[in-house]
Image (cartoon, helix red, strand yellow):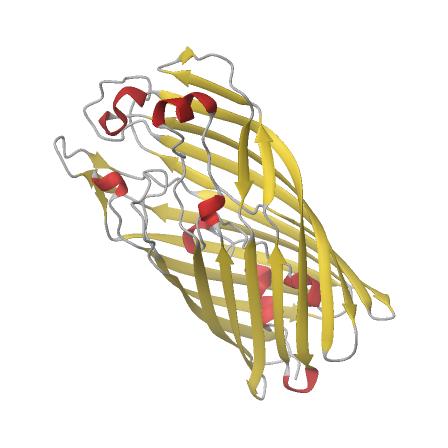
Length: 374
């Protein structure tokens, strides 16, 4: 059985669908997806997505201020090149944006006496990564893969409003830093029924950011570098044929975000070592079906969820759990496959710091990818 929109090909939509902050754990944007290594033959692929976020809430008391459009729309892109080398060896180079945050509350961040609880608070995190992964097929059924990842991050965070008391107007800028990590994994396949089960471990990556802290626009004493660890994670990708030209697939990811702590020197001294981020370890699950309707057209549908966390929610990510549904299609033209899709995500209700309420929010992601086989 061969489907142009198998579980692997469906992941070509990752930049817009599975790879959005609207449907992934914590700060995840790409899920660190490496399934390009399982593509057949030599393949180059580009993916692009846009996420439209509808995230609003209001203070619980006393001001009852309304927060509209707290979540900024964002784009995400990815690229991969996979090649066969013979004798069971293959390799892939993957470029993606693994983590991100785009939160912005209206208001003036340099006004400590702001009556609103969070007005002026904002968080922006940008990232990019290059992953080189190799695969060795021991036989038709068993293979192993491993690789190295170079990751760059930078961030800008402001705390503002009455909810932060004397720290209202605090800002920290974390300059871009690059650091290295690795991945290892294994897969079991039965090609005659399109079965594949692949498990990948992604290591934590330790960063040291040059740091600038200010309070109400006034410079603070120079800070020591801020140490931050991006989470280690496990990805389980599964697929199997269930009928002629029909494939079922599932993706499970678990990430240890409790170890991702951001506590710059001045902020740490003032709060007793509290982290600016407070994200639970968590998992997400997606299941779906892909079907080839003709030699040229295939489609897929999937649903997924991330469960609610156990801790009080941060204003820098005022959602708790997610549910989503996605639809996608692929049009095959000999050596070129064009894929596109849309995903609607229902964002879980949350009460950040117990001081504001965010309910009935959502996000819409759209995107496309182009794959060239040679």
